[in-house]
Amino acid sequence: MIRLAIQKSGRLSEDSLKLIRECGISFISTSSKLKTEATNFPLEILFLRDDDIPGYVADGVADIGIVGQNVLVEEGLQQLSVKNLGFSKCRLSLAVSKGDTYTDVTSLQGKNIATSYPNLLQEFLTSKGVQADIHTISGSVEIAPSIGLADAVCDIVSSGSTLISNGLREVETVFKSEAVLIANQNLDVEKNRLLQQLLFRMEAVQKAQKSKYVVLNAPNSAIPQIKPLLPGIKSPTIIPLAEEGWSSLHSVVNEDDFWDIIQKLKEAGAEGILVVPIEKMIG
Ligand code: ATP
Ligand code: MG
Image 1: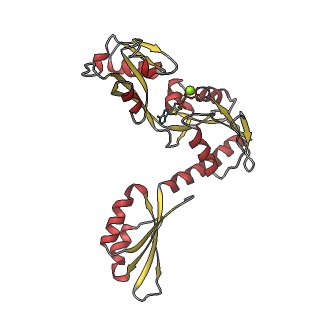
Image 2 (image 1 turned 60 degrees about the vertical axis):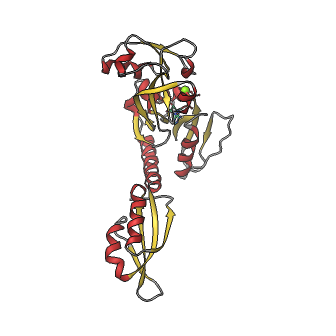
């Protein structure tokens, strides 16, 4: 049995649960429970405050966990990181009051900065040769300037709308973060085998999310032009249509190049293009 720690409730919770389910693991979760066991995989899930997850994994209370890189690095436990998970993307930014003059990071010299991430902030300021007074508070950082507690803040941002609604202006990115899978560094052979199984499944899920299955019809004369646009996993599948002189082509396309390829396919004479999501992708 392997023990996984995830956030009980917050910005990481929903996507963490979704990832476990997409790995084909079933479990019953009720919001009041602090732990649950999967029904079809030797996995126990612990629901914790996100700040506690790196420490619990480092100590072996949990074997593996899902947490934001911001919290992991703030706590000095980045060596536990195993895999970036691509969700809960955000950044730790410095912001000043909208009306304040700000030229560059040296404008913060000698200022009071409120944050919940004193270590990440200190490291950033040191790297820039700036000295400031860091005021560590655990929440509601963004109101600090308006109540006279600080001159600037260093806080988590995704869209930036919370900063704007508090009369703040984002001026520097201190750290970029996303969710990561972390693991205890002394897992026994059996737990390590289970971790490798989970990683294999996560990779299949991630690859599938980045890919689309494309089906289209084309006159045979257009195939030489279309084929190089659809490299697929090995090469596209080409099947003759019932209508003489036409074929159906099937392939896998990467999400990043998707619209570009669709445009070129149309120009090359493709018709009836279907785009289908892929659930899992192996190899
Ligand atoms: P807890 O009660 O578990 O301590 P919390 O209030 O400290 O929760 P959340 O606000 O739920 O934490 O954020 C958890 C993590 O999600 C953050 O550490 C960060 O990695 C990420 N995160 C925070 N805000 C955002 C956002 N606006 N968009 C995307 N990800 C975010
Ligand atoms: Mg927290």
